[in-house]
Image (cartoon, rainbow, N blue to C red; front, side, top):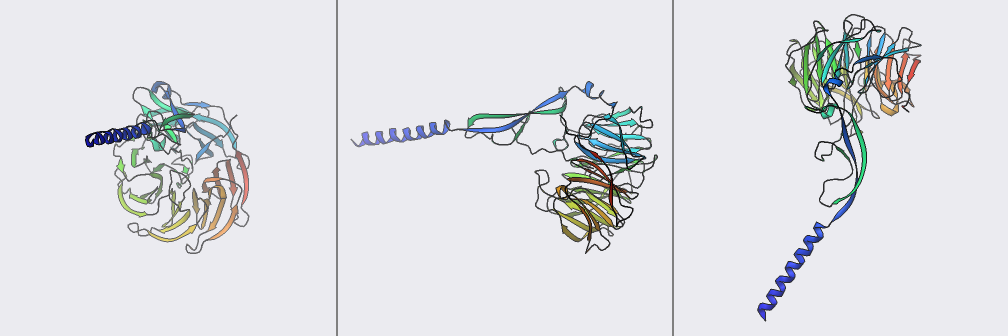
Length: 430
């Protein structure tokens, strides 16, 4: 009788375990997610696609660059709008240079250097009616999801992602859930964003380099082109810009590097973790000098008269962090940067400095103009609201500004009467 009770108890115990196991195995849930399927282009088609086309409307503008009488506006991942600024009050959109995968450019001696996904190309722009590719450095960059550079040895280059919303019933233990799943990544969820925007150089003539905005990843200093990816600095000898020479000395400078700005014999890098300074006293071999860390956040940097101006922002998965502020930093002792003061902002992006006037793009809170003669007590001079601002280039009393709704040109020759001169609006694609 006792044995029978023990046997019955064991049978019941195994039954409970079995039913629990079945219940677990049968646990299901409904999930909805976005699946991104890559569209590949063959290497042959991709590398033969550069073309000069007729002007097109701005649809998704990115970084801006000035050279001579021309303004170049990046159309993110598609190419470059060419704007004739001979008459600042009436800019003329004259052409579009198709460059797949383009985000950054730099120009020297009528040679335009541009990224094209993993390649860097050189274009002769001495005749804007006959722009042509004259050199290509293949595979200058590796696969880099943060920069949107994805290619496959056999399939080619990913030139587009097709989104598809999927709702399905899945096992409770599945890692699928809300989010974005990128094809070929074995269901890994990725926070992926193109952070496009328009560094200031000193030359804006038809010779030498042009002028970029504070979000630039390309910088020309004398006979060298410096570019950054997510964590490395790349150096190129452009003594002859039509034949750039890759020095093959990529330097690891940290993770989440975003922007580059030249000042004196130094390069200032904005990263998501702080401002990093490298010396280019030996231009072929940049070396680390110092770093000023901050809370995590996106941060372009510009420098003038040994004062660095850095914006930190949050608001998207790429930037992270919780700070929205302007940092003013003393870099007179380049080995020991010292934070002077921080000022709260809404969601600051790009910025530019001209003597004591700081121009700051505060995202959807508009354009803000400050008198920064006293770093400990800056004074807001103007605030243009109801525009979503991205980056600026102040040059020769003109402020070139790009935002999500297009381009604006301001005249600030009289700081008591800063006024809008002209615009080029974004035209939504149909």
